[in-house]
Length: 311
Image (cartoon, rainbow, N blue to C red; front, side):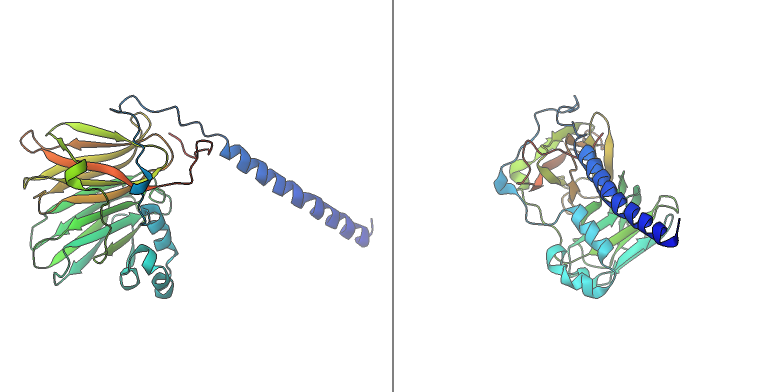
């Protein structure tokens, strides 16, 4: 065969191979999109039917996953400033720090013009295992959290820590995972997320040692959680479940005063069958008040739309 014939044959094979690969990719996407059958697999541990909130409660804020994805895309301060209005106006002035496994990073505020600090932790898809603490003075830790997420990209950690008293405050983030599992930490003190629901109207009392569960509909994209006490210590364990005892995200919380330092967090609800479970790990004398409500809702989701996800 001559060189000219070989070139023609190679060109023919290149033209034939391209449509085949495109068709294979299309068929693969179609198969993956049709494998979801999760709507009928809810666990038996829920207390009531899945919560389907009214559309008027939909939040206009960005979910935690969107914040985490935008943080990973911010490689220079100019790009951070362009999207600052969508996430937070302080993003362009704050630092996004990579915390390697086993290392510690701190953010110190010498003055106290702010009474709250928001902490966002995420990964590139690997597990997220971190210890978050608030230091106020020597040997004083009024708030501490142990955070775990099965996937720090789709289920990042986003919480607001109260700093009510004057004086220097330091937020410490320690990556307790292995060295192969780094995480991205973002701390801001201006224009933090605000709850939509009214705590006094939507809250219930969780006695010491008791647990409560809140199931949510597939249309709910993120959930807001508010916990407080009447001034006593706050000890709680917050879990995001998807299926019977399939824990996707865990937050173990302690604050020395649940009235001055209430807890507020936004947790993303991916797929269907999502349930929030809150356990009051304190003694019976220390009840807490909990409010768990939808934060953002997908209005475009129909009953015929396949849900990508799994248990």
